[in-house]
Image 1 (cartoon, rainbow, N blue to C red):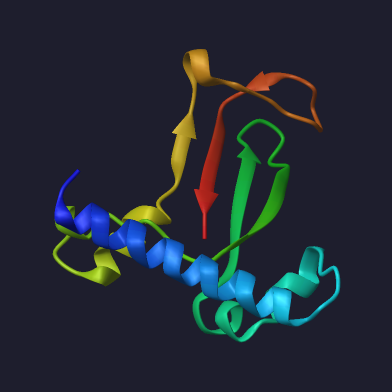
Image 2 (image 1 turned 90 degrees about the horizontal axis):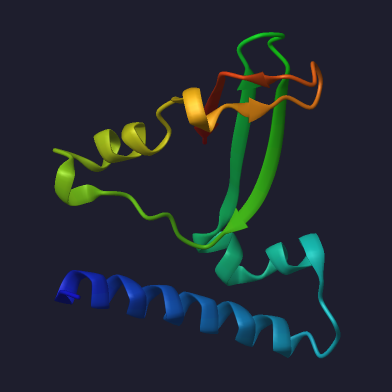
Length: 115
């Protein structure tokens, strides 16, 4: 592991520890979306939408997951904007990676996108 990965890991643990500290300061059990109300979450966090689109019936399903950091491949991109564009790029799953569509009930090609 190089120093850049160490620095990223340190930043992740620091932000998570600050977030947990804010939750403990509430002095009550905080669950679900209430966890997203801390100052730390408001400053660093967000919700990542993962969208799966069936290429057969066009049905799209979305899941939303909270995050406090994103792992962008900055070293492989000329800018943060390009790294973010790569992160949100549509991926096609086909062949052995076909997906069982919950609407048409078939194994189909899909588009997967996180944004």
